[in-house]
Length: 310
Image 1 (cartoon, rainbow, N blue to C red):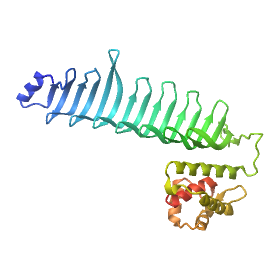
Image 2: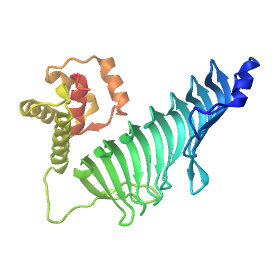
Image 3: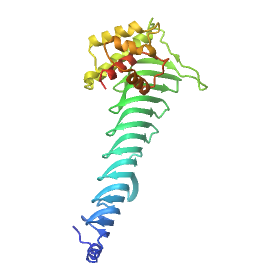
């Protein structure tokens, strides 16, 4: 440890709360002190030349602060925002050595919560993060303008999502597994002035009940995902799915859908008990209206929730 004349002079004068003190050779702190610890506002210059300027508590970076890195004899801002116990924690902006910029929430030094990442090549992701990886709902916009809007898990596309191919004016809507499309529909995008999209049909394929087949495939994908992730009660066995599908078909209309108004009776036919208030709360949570139709895949998700799977 290198002695510091200013620090010891202040200490003799009963004023150790402001001054400079070098903890290790080449490092220096200038700022406020409390109980002989960095506490308040101060600037720390590290041995390799990096600098932190901001708030401290109990000898650790805590509060608002900015961290600069020394590169080519020039200081560049790397992170500005909230800190807790020497780690990024709260709202902050981070720019890495490649020029990629993240602005959003942090927990324990990792991206966590809502945030936006802008890559140097123009690609962006805006949405939810969990322990440093994309997790939850988000929007990924590629360098060429194509865009994915949907669910992520473990940093990859996983679950329901839409991929917009703006160069061809088409959109894929369906389930994604491990970053790749698993089953869904390929449609033309609605015109800019509004209107509805039209299904883009492949001439070599024709199904008499396409919606029912698609819903069944989506339900199987979701159940397989629940099994792989250790979903426990959230995943049904083959016999359970067969019973659920038979009940659904008995209530479905010609389009292979079930009206929301028939949902209570359908649930009760499976031997499940759910109060009207609880069911209404669930429907409000998923944004369903009284005159909406439910697909088989959506019904399976509802049964998972009601049976305590999530």
